[in-house]
Image (cartoon, rainbow, N blue to C red; front, top):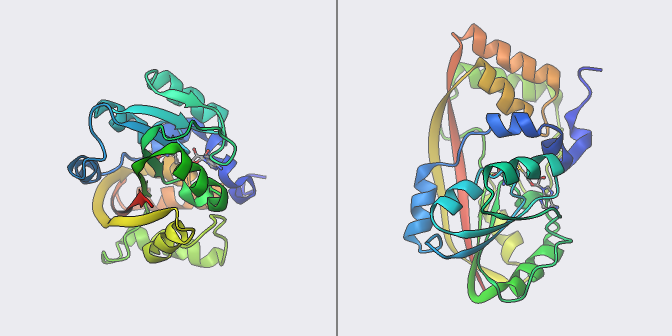
Length: 254
Ligand SMILES: C[S@@+](CC[C@H](N)C(=O)[O-])C[C@H]1O[C@@H](n2cnc3c(N)ncnc32)[C@H](O)[C@@H]1O
């Protein structure tokens, strides 16, 4: 049935929609990359372990900054796209929980819109072992909707769709904008301490097809709901300005 919930796929949702993911997800904000360079986390020669790399949305800018990136991605379709686009990255087809990483090897670990899928009880000690003694773990996530911006006509429609479905967020962990709780989750075990927390606000104009692609990539959106969102854009003239938020949490190895 066309309205079979995407939710049953959980994290495999992304691999099942790899091509759409690749063209639908907008890039991370430039200010985020500038901050990572400013904090001296991203620099030529830095050795990065990236967990849940997808099609390489974050891998590309890190390689461009001169980093040596080892990308861990369990989804075969996603990984194939990453490999084709970023042949300089070392690719490990595995989960963050199962991957065997060398000890004291990486300067920086990165999880870009992926940490909520990990079993942190397994992953945090493993990263602690794989990072050099003063290594860092940078966690960020695109939240597609900024609650601080007045609600746009398109967002009214989105809110209506979400309200109608009731509770159905299959993404584990605290809410995407509950940064304090994420900091607690990431530091509780004592392996890491938070050193920098920042929220990047940005906006982007998206047309009907782009909204259709982007919303298809959301693991908690059904196809019929995506159709409805795309129709709303069409009715609003074919392009909407979307306001997004990207929380960044930088942790230092304790
Ligand atoms: C929303 S996507 C983000 C992908 C990419 N980092 C980006 O910024 O576009 C989440 C990614 O996490 C991956 N993932 C899910 N569970 C995982 C796990 N246990 N270990 C590693 N990656 C996982 C998915 O396959 C997917 O590529």
